Amino acid sequence: MAAGWRLLFVPSRARELAVALGASIMVPSMVAAPLLLAALVAALISGSSFVWGSFWVLLALTVVAAILLTVATMYVTVSTTVRWVELRTMETPAQLVIARFLRSSTMAMADLQRVVVIERLSLGQRQSIKVVWHTRSEKVECEPPTSAPLSRVDAQALTSWLTEQLGPVQVAVERQTEVKRDFLRPDEWWTPSHTAEQWRVPVGEVDNIAAQRGVEGYRYTPRASAMHSPGTSVTVYDPARAHEVAEELRAERAAGRAADSAAAPGPAEGDATDPR
Image (cartoon, rainbow, N blue to C red):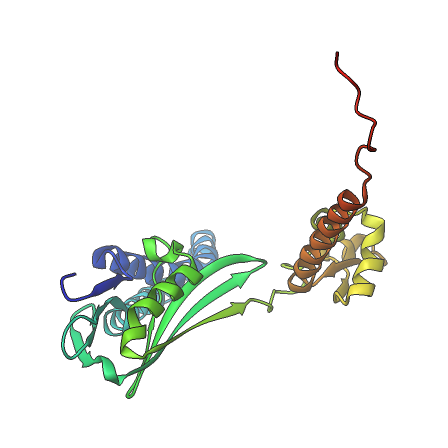
């Protein structure tokens, strides 16, 4: 840009609206599908007018729910989603332009208090990135969809770039990390075999390492075993802490290898043979 730079969060308005529309239609349809199928089968078998009436009422309620959810989703998307933010730092005075789906607003850069780049991580992998603009009057959150190029930009590189652009106008830029720790227990917790694979140890050592390193375990009886083998139980481990332990063990092994290499004796002086 001639007067500054633009951060593009939503490359395509049509694609973003299509995704929102599809989600708003699919959610009520998937929730109601089992009930609709059961009601349809019951109506076909019984032939009762009452059962058929119940089926049509359920179908109508599903359609109404889909319509209401679609309207609400479209309204939220259009009114709150930020498409791009333009930093006009080369103008006098410097300005910040925030463009939503149907309108854009321009404010003086002096009204911008700070910018926060938030990176969300799960088991060491980035799930999303968000840029929050704190102004005197509001907090504007910008999160690119997974299809947007900005969603794949390194968080530290983005923070450094924003610092470079906003430093001359004295706007602080921060980087924060949010780590997911609320994994669904026991479905998302790690089994002993998976934990052993990540820690690179035999399965029999997992319990001892977990106890030593403070990894929370959860013991439960799977549904399949509850019917046929009531006494059978399984222990699973908190993936957040287990992942941290995997990183700790990897670092300790690397340090051990480095220490062994440093301690290994080199060729003794005078041992070199004459090739002639």
